[in-house]
Image 1 (tube, rainbow, N blue to C red):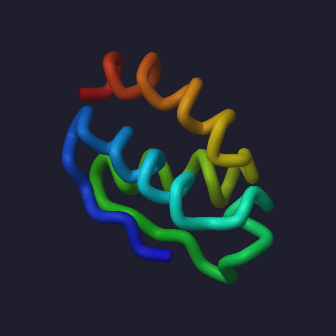
Image 2: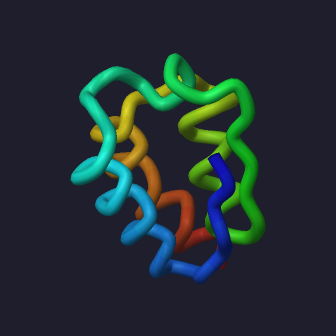
Image 3: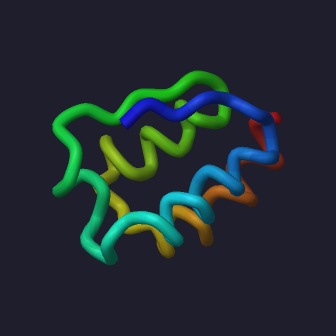
Length: 68
């Protein structure tokens, strides 16, 4: 899974994934999750921290506000 950047708009990445993927965590569906910029932040939440999409959506905004 490759996720492009987009600043605070990276939340749209998570919303798109939520609407297209099954409810299992993405780390169980993909062998590799990478990203650039805000996509990198999403990749860390989903891949390294092994969060589900709903948990990632909750954490994304506060982290992105301080990072971007």
